[in-house]
Amino acid sequence: MIGSSQRETLYCEVCGSEIRGPAYRAEVDGVEMTLCPSCYYKLSKSGRARLVRRRSERRVRRPRRPRIEMYDIVGDYDERIRSAREAKGWSTAVLAQKLRISESMLKKIESGKMKPTIDLARRMEKLLGIELLVPTEFEDEEYTAPPPGGLTLGDIVVVRRDED
Image (cartoon, rainbow, N blue to C red):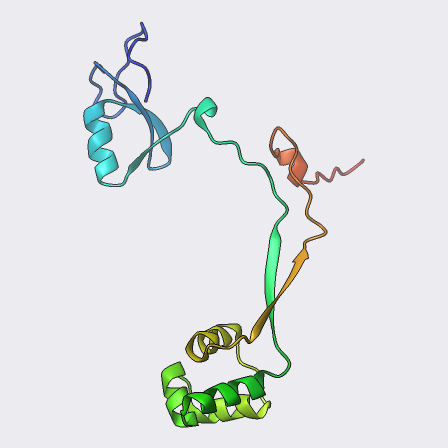
């Protein structure tokens, strides 16, 4: 919102009327515009306008090194799944139905011939109350934090010049 105490007269860039009272600086369909309260209300209600913050209002985020979290499935997953299923008194057919997978797939997993996907392992953990996933963390060594003023095109693009 732009202060109404400014001396210059502002006009709505949508309807063209003089703005009396607060003026809104908003992005409408990708274009930054000054709007009267009426136009801002109508366009924001339809989802076409969103308020634009001034630089002083923007939140400053500190760049962090990305932490990539990956999971490994424990080595004795087949034994853990089988013993947990048997402890609950379920057959392979019952567990397969609860997991929404085929019984033959469950039998392959329980025999150690096939590893479950991360998603399936999570569902098994929740359903059977066991631990199958172990987090493996590492940091991306190629990542460098952007300069304090932000990135520029020159920081990203390498210009090749043909010499005559």
